[in-house]
Length: 264
Image (cartoon, rainbow, N blue to C red; front, side, top):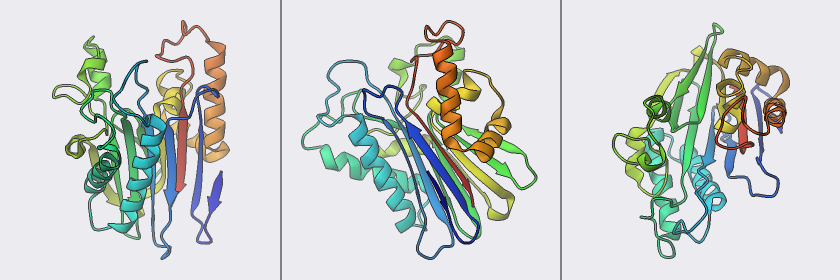
């Protein structure tokens, strides 16, 4: 899907399930204020729990939709609040929505990675929590990947990451505890220094991180030239070419994927 404003802003986004027989656990959305002087994007990657009871009657797609919608609304309605505070409010609001029916203390309670960005006439703010990625293209053409690399560091140390979710010394996702937002990677840049933003769940960033089809700059170039759906299509082709995961080891043969491109 593509959206264009009369002032020249370009927004494109796409998302697709890894398995068409299962609900898509990714969430991607963009909001533009009525004033027309900025906007916000939110991309979540729901964490698929192992088979069995996760203490919640609703499931991951419900959670990512609730959390994503709350975060998108709060980034617009509380523009003076830092993105980390907006995420904390969104987590608390979502937890309240099912605390009376579900065990939110369960270690597998629904949770998600988070990428959020917000821009106005002066600044671009961003937040990344866990292993989704935000690409920032500067006006000079350089592309920076904003990453929360805790999972990669744990794996490089040969440690099992499952038991280390949302514990000190491990990695962190948005679940039911608003305090987790203190672990997010955050920052801001002058609006005049930013040419484009791209947010990817790890199902889409496989093009770079798993299949090594190009670097982050090439990924953003592909998004600009052909759009987010083309990136996802290329990932799917690479997955189908290695169905047994032997050439390119990965946790899932096919993963939910979401990508958003914004040229503010």
